[in-house]
Structure formats: structure tokens, C-alpha cells
Amino acid sequence: MRPLRPANKVFIPLFVVALALMASWVSQREGAPPAANDEPVEAPDKPRNPPFDFYLLALTSHPAFCADGHARERECRAGDRLPISIHGLWPERLATGQYPHDCAGPALDLEPDTERELATLMPGMAQRLHEHEWRKHGTCSGLDDDQYFQAAFQRAGEVDRALGPKLTTLAGRQVDAAALRAAVDQRAPGMGATLTFHCRTLRDAPRRQRRDPFLVEIRQCLERNESGAPGGAVSCATVDRRDQGCGRSFRIAEAR
Image: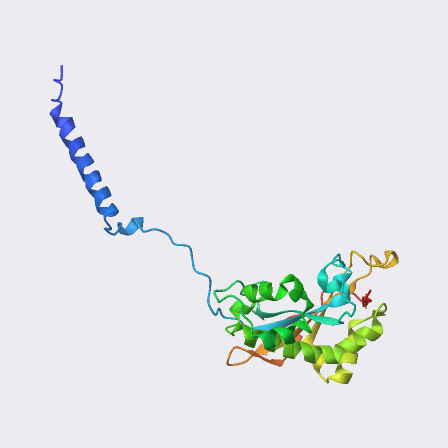
């Protein structure tokens, strides 16, 4: 029969292991660096000034916005309704669906003059749309907040002067994309190709028009210049952007 091992043969190694573990725990509590394979994993920081290729200036058909379930919102209760309003200015990549967003940046703090000017074409400021757009898109532009919104305001004014009067004339009627681009080109030659039209049905459309697509948004394609700011307008075909949801013809919403 094999004799039993003395108890101290087992006890001593276990005791030594326990002392080693205790020493390791104390050293880490006192600030000793962890072993290389035990380094803590940190959450990644928000990106700062990520790469992008061009800008999209997003403009809303304001009567359509108000007729799509927003009639009770403050911006839709005003007496005068703009034909076009600013939605945002978006840094874009050529690959669709991969735009930069929610980048690192300071909180919005516009100069009073910029804020007053912007309010004339961005009624969504009443619901803090400008804060959302700065946080999601503006922080990725590399511009400061005043530069970003001044660029959006300037570009939106150019499109509004070329397209706004036609939308007012066509309110309640049907039109096709080619005719609308031709109307824009009469006022600003070449601008029509820099715009895309986006349509969908509206929740509060008259009953007989519930299935008709309405123009809800206009986007202009803008180059990114060397400083990172929006440059000249470019044909949207060159950046692979096109109309969506408008079909052969679509309606222009009426202000109500």
C-alpha cells in the first residue's frame, strides 16, 4: 500500500500561491500598472474632423412639413409660411449611408446676428432644430458654428430665390422633375442639375390626394473647398445623388 504524503507537502505550495496573489492585489491597488494582457478597454472618443467628400444642403418644403402631422407645432401656427426652409447642411461621403455624424465639438453658441438671420429661413429653430443639426452634422464640418450656419443660410437663400416663387405658384398642383428643374434654370442657369427632389405621401393631405407623392425636401450638392467649407454647387449626378420617391409627377403642398 502506497504511504500517504505528509500534509505539509500540500499546504506549503498553496500557502505560497496565496501570498503571491495577495501581493499582486496590493500592488495594483497602490497604482502598479496591470499586466499587458489585462489593460482596461476604454470607450472610443467621438471622431474629430472626420474625412468627407462634399456637402448636401437639405431644404424642406415647409407647407409639406406642416401637412405631415406637424400642424400644431409652433413653426406651423404662424400666419406666413415659407415655401422653403432650412433643414440642415450635411457633410457627405461618396458612399451612400456612410456620412460622418455626432463628432466631437463645442456646444452651439451662435452670435446674436447669426441667430436672427438664420431664424428667417429656419423656422424649426422653434423646436431647437438648429441645435440638433449642429450636434449631428455641424460638428463634423470642421467649421465653427457661426461659419456653418452662415454658409447654410447663404446657400439656402440662393435656392429659395430661384425655386421658392415657382413652388408658391404651383401650390396645390402637380409637376414633374424636369419641368421644375427647367423653372429653376430660368432664374439661375445650371442650378437645376445641382438639386435632387424627394417625395412621399402626407398624413394630412386632402383625402383624394392621400396616395399622391408630395415634394417634401430639396437637396443641393455642394463641393467641399480646400478650407473644408462648402464651395460651389455641383451636378448631383457627379456624386451619385438622385431624386427619390417622386415618380413621374408629384404635388406641391399648399400653405394652410
